[in-house]
Length: 137
Image (cartoon, rainbow, N blue to C red; front, side):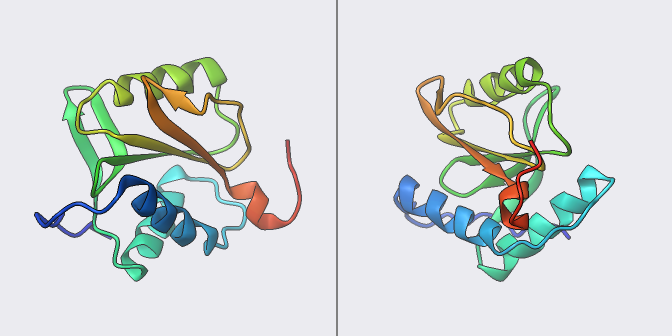
Protein backbone atom coordinates (compact mmCIF):
# COMPACT_ATOMS: atom_id res chain seq x y z
CA UNK A 1 0.00 0.00 0.00
CA UNK A 2 1.39 3.42 -0.90
CA UNK A 3 1.56 6.12 1.74
CA UNK A 4 -0.45 9.28 1.45
CA UNK A 5 1.23 12.58 0.72
CA UNK A 6 2.29 14.42 3.86
CA UNK A 7 0.27 17.46 4.78
CA UNK A 8 1.76 20.93 4.65
CA UNK A 9 -0.29 22.14 7.63
CA UNK A 10 1.00 23.21 11.04
CA UNK A 11 2.99 20.31 12.54
CA UNK A 12 1.65 18.66 15.67
CA UNK A 13 3.72 18.36 18.80
CA UNK A 14 6.40 15.72 18.17
CA UNK A 15 5.68 13.75 21.35
CA UNK A 16 1.96 13.64 20.57
CA UNK A 17 2.62 12.39 17.05
CA UNK A 18 5.02 9.71 18.34
CA UNK A 19 2.29 8.59 20.76
CA UNK A 20 -0.22 8.36 17.87
CA UNK A 21 2.19 6.19 15.87
CA UNK A 22 2.89 3.92 18.86
CA UNK A 23 -0.86 3.57 19.49
CA UNK A 24 -1.35 2.45 15.88
CA UNK A 25 1.50 -0.06 16.23
CA UNK A 26 0.02 -1.47 19.45
CA UNK A 27 -3.05 -2.55 17.49
CA UNK A 28 -0.98 -4.79 15.21
CA UNK A 29 -1.47 -8.53 15.49
CA UNK A 30 1.34 -10.10 13.56
CA UNK A 31 2.04 -13.81 13.60
CA UNK A 32 5.20 -15.43 12.33
CA UNK A 33 6.25 -13.64 9.15
CA UNK A 34 9.18 -14.60 6.98
CA UNK A 35 9.44 -11.40 4.94
CA UNK A 36 10.13 -7.89 6.25
CA UNK A 37 8.04 -6.29 3.52
CA UNK A 38 4.93 -8.05 4.90
CA UNK A 39 5.49 -6.42 8.28
CA UNK A 40 5.88 -3.10 6.47
CA UNK A 41 2.57 -3.63 4.67
CA UNK A 42 0.78 -4.29 7.97
CA UNK A 43 2.35 -1.19 9.51
CA UNK A 44 1.30 0.91 6.49
CA UNK A 45 -2.27 -0.36 6.90
CA UNK A 46 -2.24 0.43 10.64
CA UNK A 47 -0.97 3.98 10.04
CA UNK A 48 -3.53 4.55 7.28
CA UNK A 49 -6.37 3.33 9.53
CA UNK A 50 -5.36 5.98 12.08
CA UNK A 51 -5.08 8.68 9.38
CA UNK A 52 -1.37 9.14 10.04
CA UNK A 53 0.25 10.48 6.86
CA UNK A 54 3.46 8.70 5.82
CA UNK A 55 5.73 7.96 2.92
CA UNK A 56 7.21 4.49 2.43
CA UNK A 57 10.85 4.00 1.46
CA UNK A 58 11.58 7.67 2.06
CA UNK A 59 14.85 8.76 0.48
CA UNK A 60 16.90 10.86 2.89
CA UNK A 61 19.96 10.76 0.60
CA UNK A 62 21.61 8.28 -1.75
CA UNK A 63 21.84 4.90 0.02
CA UNK A 64 19.75 6.21 2.90
CA UNK A 65 16.11 5.14 2.63
CA UNK A 66 14.14 4.80 5.83
CA UNK A 67 11.18 2.41 5.73
CA UNK A 68 8.65 5.09 6.73
CA UNK A 69 8.77 8.86 7.03
CA UNK A 70 5.87 10.10 9.13
CA UNK A 71 4.80 13.73 9.35
CA UNK A 72 6.56 15.90 11.94
CA UNK A 73 9.88 14.19 11.24
CA UNK A 74 9.37 10.69 12.60
CA UNK A 75 11.42 7.99 10.91
CA UNK A 76 10.28 4.39 11.36
CA UNK A 77 12.57 1.48 10.51
CA UNK A 78 11.45 -2.17 10.48
CA UNK A 79 13.72 -5.14 11.18
CA UNK A 80 12.63 -8.78 11.04
CA UNK A 81 14.00 -11.16 13.63
CA UNK A 82 16.57 -9.89 16.10
CA UNK A 83 18.86 -7.46 14.28
CA UNK A 84 22.59 -7.10 14.88
CA UNK A 85 22.83 -4.37 17.52
CA UNK A 86 25.96 -2.68 16.15
CA UNK A 87 24.66 -2.62 12.58
CA UNK A 88 21.21 -1.32 13.51
CA UNK A 89 22.58 1.43 15.76
CA UNK A 90 24.86 2.52 12.93
CA UNK A 91 21.88 2.64 10.59
CA UNK A 92 19.78 4.61 13.09
CA UNK A 93 22.68 7.04 13.62
CA UNK A 94 22.82 7.66 9.86
CA UNK A 95 19.09 8.34 9.74
CA UNK A 96 19.17 10.56 12.84
CA UNK A 97 21.95 12.66 11.30
CA UNK A 98 19.45 14.08 8.79
CA UNK A 99 17.78 17.33 9.81
CA UNK A 100 14.30 16.23 8.74
CA UNK A 101 14.39 13.28 11.15
CA UNK A 102 13.36 14.48 14.62
CA UNK A 103 12.68 11.06 16.18
CA UNK A 104 13.28 7.43 15.22
CA UNK A 105 11.11 4.40 15.95
CA UNK A 106 12.67 0.96 15.46
CA UNK A 107 10.12 -1.84 15.02
CA UNK A 108 11.56 -5.31 15.58
CA UNK A 109 10.19 -8.81 15.98
CA UNK A 110 12.65 -9.57 18.77
CA UNK A 111 14.02 -6.90 21.06
CA UNK A 112 17.50 -5.49 20.77
CA UNK A 113 19.04 -3.01 23.19
CA UNK A 114 19.32 0.47 21.64
CA UNK A 115 19.93 3.88 23.22
CA UNK A 116 16.95 6.07 24.12
CA UNK A 117 18.51 8.97 22.23
CA UNK A 118 20.65 8.99 19.10
CA UNK A 119 22.21 12.23 17.85
CA UNK A 120 20.21 13.88 20.66
CA UNK A 121 16.94 12.73 19.07
CA UNK A 122 14.42 10.36 20.69
CA UNK A 123 14.90 6.75 19.65
CA UNK A 124 12.07 4.38 20.55
CA UNK A 125 12.20 0.59 20.37
CA UNK A 126 8.91 -1.13 19.56
CA UNK A 127 9.13 -4.90 19.95
CA UNK A 128 6.38 -6.81 18.17
CA UNK A 129 6.99 -9.81 20.45
CA UNK A 130 5.48 -7.79 23.32
CA UNK A 131 2.19 -7.87 21.44
CA UNK A 132 2.29 -11.66 21.37
CA UNK A 133 2.05 -11.97 25.16
CA UNK A 134 5.32 -13.92 25.39
CA UNK A 135 8.94 -12.89 25.38
CA UNK A 136 11.08 -14.49 22.70
CA UNK A 137 14.43 -12.93 23.61
